[in-house]
Length: 128
Image (cartoon, rainbow, N blue to C red; front, side, top):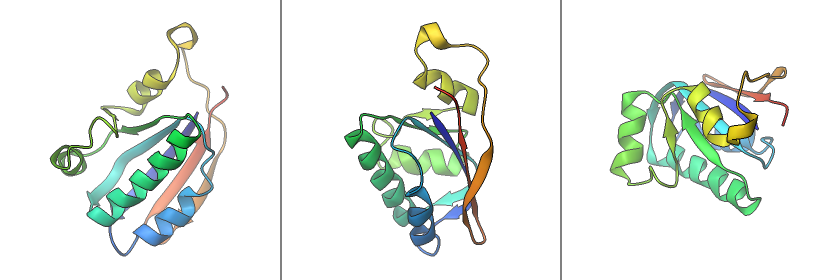
């Protein structure tokens, strides 16, 4: 499982950089921590859907975590909450991706920055 932390606005200006940064995300289960995202536009939503498509082709799952009200509203208004499941916290999102028998304290690896401009993305790999 991979944890990706995104900070800032996901909009027309930032979408190309975010798209490029997310290319380094491994094609396995991913939690997107959106707690630091202030705004999500159609361009940003497209980038998330592109990531979702790539992950689904690999048999992986994408869960959005800790999204602020404005971001949750956009996902719900576009009726994408089934395709882009949302969890209230990162811990809850990780729990959604782990089999019941494997649940317990989550160990995370080192984080590395993959996207930086006026926004930042941090990816943390967690052991299987």
